[in-house]
Image 1: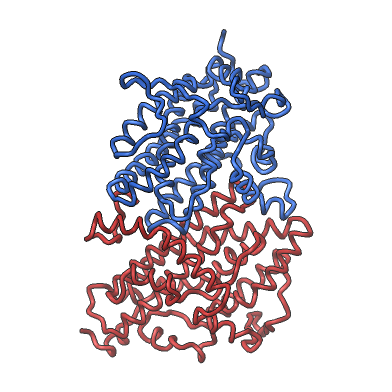
Image 2: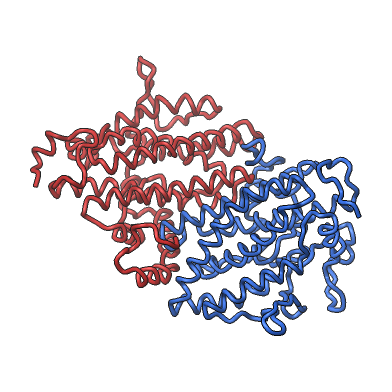
Length: 311
Length: 314
């Protein structure tokens, strides 16, 4: 197959368009929702210094979300359809980013940040040579900021893991978060209306998300140069040894054989809600209601733009 | 040690620094003033934080998150300037704030419940703060004046953003305009009280002014604010409420009828006894207690640093 020309959004086939949109929603929704959660720590972090640092990360992620959503501007989508008036069931973020923080659970904040940041680094690498110039052009700027995030998370993890209470809290957070982290590498379901009858499939015999064609297209069209399985394996090969070096037990690590990380996610390893398939936890609905509150209260029909083009 | 007479004689902009051996009266008065300012940054940020999430667009959300972050940064800077007087540590000041002993601006004791109230803080209150802070760049405690340089620079952006939010609301739907006018009527007297009671009722004014800590009187600041912000409010279509009565002087400047303002409420607030404000103090205390375990971990790691300098992991 010849690589489609994504520099010309007018001349894409329906499948090409869907692959691009699906990829962007994976990226942008993850960043947007994670940023929403990070902002919960503003004016609540352990110290003024950590408050400032987490606020920085939240703004970085929000900026990235804005950059990714903007890619779909070529396809006639605006922030209204993509965020403020999108049906919450049409968001495609992984469930790890939507879970609320328990008050004071800083261990969750730094662990979640680490798990997401590693995944983010890997998928950005796989986008460096994307066939979509708009995607490829945005990667370098985002990478620059993300490397700092991971370093920050690791500094904290290492610090907390040394203390008894910190270690206990990290282990509890890991047990709770790990299954949701695996959903980062789950396939996306297409929007409702297209194969809508299948998206709520809960049988164990076949994958619930029927987007695997879309996911294959994303790679076949050269939009991303690694498959979800490859990204997941790489991710496990990084996070499992690292977390074990902190004396943490990784639940269901997917490790098979002698140290090779075969990425074999079984149904049992995954939570009921996987996000990518449009099935979310109740916390997502509450979060959605909260962030759209003003927009609805004031009867707005267009989210305010301050910057003409995102930087 | 420098005696009080010399302090008063020398009192000028940025005159004193940690190199000077200053009398206790000066150091305590300066600590009280800067601690109040720092506490206000924190409690202002606490009040506004729900609107990061409730901002009606990604751009607004980014700007609002950055604003709240800036206020925390100002708090950090100001606690450092206060600490350098050698009277209280940052931990003592933050503990006092959590325990309800720390004082902060009257406006941050009120609840903030809707986006239409946001510009009441981020345009009017921040605008009022800007006026005061601009004069404090000439305060006699050099670390305080130095902090004000950065604070004023950033606050300028906040006020611009607040003004943009107000403009958007007042050019929006009729419903938005009405809601904004109602919010303005509720907040207007509180905003005027931002500057505190008239000079003859102000407890700390004379001393602070005689040692150069305070550069302009409450009355002068309030009047200058009215001169600047009444026309701005009108420009955006807000109607100035009948009460408190505002007199227009012959030269076109304004003065407020002090007796029309609720000073009982003001002094209840000043004692940290006003109900919504207490809820905010305790809400923040609760959030701080929930992360005590992290601070204890940090302190155990680095007993000497005690959290002043940025840590490797912060």
